[in-house]
Image (cartoon, rainbow, N blue to C red; front, side, top):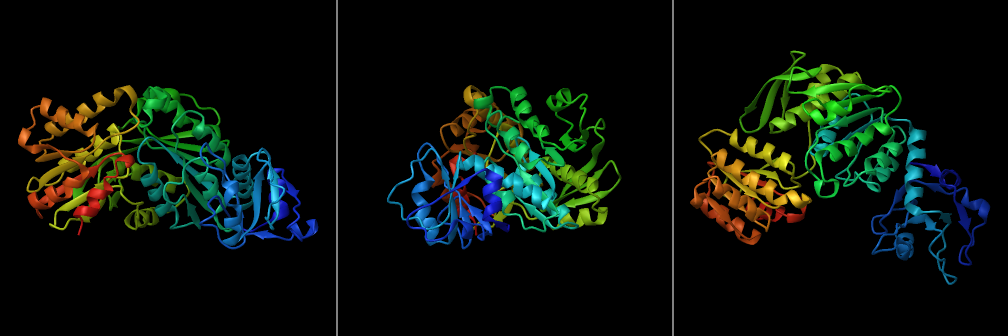
Length: 467
């Protein structure tokens, strides 16, 4: 990023506040060149703009001086926050109606200057993995920028766009939500040329009440989709098909397992506990260094993005082969006792939990299969039913051991016992006691799935058992 302060003031319809401490003339302000934006005074660097956000329990304006000490050369100021008469701030202060809104507007204007092709990705599960897959494919041809980590909300997406280099050709942005209206806000900032919906699950059903409402919230992504743009969606999801029967201003490409999709899966298999190989309806063979049938569909969504943006088939295959995924999403690791760990501890919903358990079941019969499962959060009144259902699935898959933790995890435990899973193989433990149990009872002939919602912090188990 490289913008003059006068451009930023114009973009956000702000005005300069003069202070007694500031010796610069107003004309000099316009010579300032901003090379980045940060909302965190601890992470800001030289020549950046500081954006002090205001929340229920914090006020970023209190940290402007710290931001200055770390290199900030200008800051926004929310007009609803009284400006202290004894302020010692000695950098340009841009008064705006609301600092968050100004951040979002600045991001949209900067995106319009860079003019990248924008690929927006949403869905209940698999957003981040699909983002990584799309990015790995597209970078084979384009100068690419993507969402880092999980910066996919009303703050993270603008920061992602503002961190784009000026020569970016394609931006791949992830869009997350917990309630209606949030994806709409993000898509109107990003204005994607291509939108991707991975699936409709149960995440955030506590707030949205039904999967139909979740589908409507995810479909908000089309409100910012460019005219004549392309939506690539999971065609195995009836809720999406029913709501997208006759789109007028954009095209839809259906991807999935069934032959009623325009791009569908023909064959797939697990290879050496390391990768999946699959054949698609275009008779091409692909190798994916990522486990899980659900990730094959995520890969196909990414392939379709690559094909639409004219990435050659060999480059697409190379992009899949060179995939690097964001952490704790079915990462393969090794335990101190040489057992194989499937680290899927970043998040969990009933849909993703079932997919990961099916993957665990697909490993060779020579391996002992162990699931370490914890709470799935934000399921509202349906939480007990969903957790019991996962326990029953564990019993039906004939897993060798089910280890649960947490209050809701105990309901997984009881569901497995109700479904007649061997009581000696169903164990409920506190998180701190799981590593010792695992290291004492399993060996190199074991594959261990670790999965729960992020708030459970099952990564502590991983740290305790991995080599």
